[in-house]
Length: 63
Image (cartoon, rainbow, N blue to C red; front, side):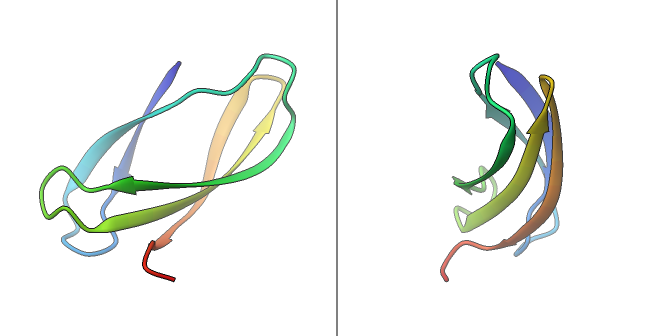
């Protein structure tokens, strides 16, 4: 499990999210995380390459 800090799309507070990906997974993924401060959904678009997770975009999870 990997923990990353993101900035909430709605309230701009920093929150920590936990991302769990298989060791063999390489590619792009999207997940929705509710903000612990304002409870709004944040859509995370991220890529995984050789176990390294890079968050590309945090957007409105209401889409």
